Amino acid sequence: MIDLTQGNLFNFFITLLLLTSAVFLRYLLMAGLFYYLVNFRFVDQMQNRKISFRPRRDGQVRQEIMYSFFTSVLFACLGTLVLYSWQQGGTALYLDFGQYHWSWLIISVVVVLIIHETYYYWLHRWMHRPGVYKWVHRIHHESLTTSAWTSFSFHPVESFLQALPIFMLIYFIPLHPVSLITVFLIMSVTSVINHLNHELYPAGTSSHWLGKWWIGATHHSLHHSQFNYNFGLYFTFWDHWMHTESPDFQKTFDSKTKSK
Figure 1 (cartoon, rainbow, N blue to C red):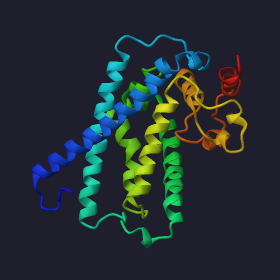
Figure 2: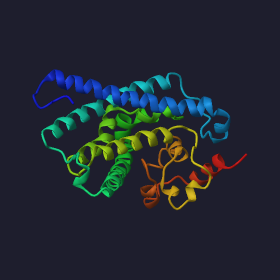
Figure 3: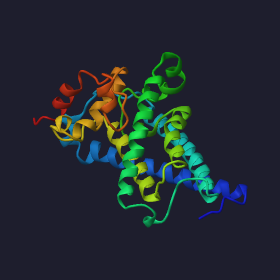
Figure 4: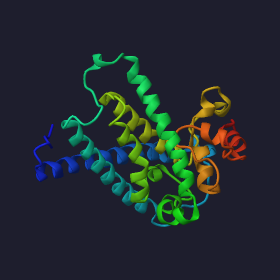
């Protein structure tokens, strides 16, 4: 591991380069895999599960990949700062599995996801205020018909605001790297799935005691087309509680998942 505590600018640059490459490569592999599966490998099976048939605009994928690269750089900057802080002993990260009960590995993931969800729901609603939207959130909504490539396409300010709580929590909540990596994987996979424009989850998920709290492609695609509904990130509970879930969600989900 590169030592950042000596104030060596070369070490900072190399760390930033490596982290940027890792984050961007993860995006390309994850988005590319799901894009291939939905649009090529299982195209016939997924045709009836397509949500929006509006054509994507010219150059949309290229723009999404470009902004996703900027997102990767920003995440890498925050990651480099956290790594430096950890090497200085300034975070709550721990390496010894025995330091906490094994169940904390799972509980800590749930805690971080719920805090992130709560933060993002209210951030998301704030970003839809007219004076904020055009400067911060408009870039993401330029993708009216989303795809796997849309998953990390944000204005740099939005990318920073989205990432901030997770990186801040590293300073206050004891997290093992396994838990932290799990959170990042869940964030990446769900973001890709929610932007696929094809519903992957089976019929009945939206009424299942657990599945009804989980966001999928139908839920988030309606946000891109209706704007004023479905502000959640991972879960639907804030949309339920604040009455911001689209009235068309259940009907649309059922129409995309019923057997034909």
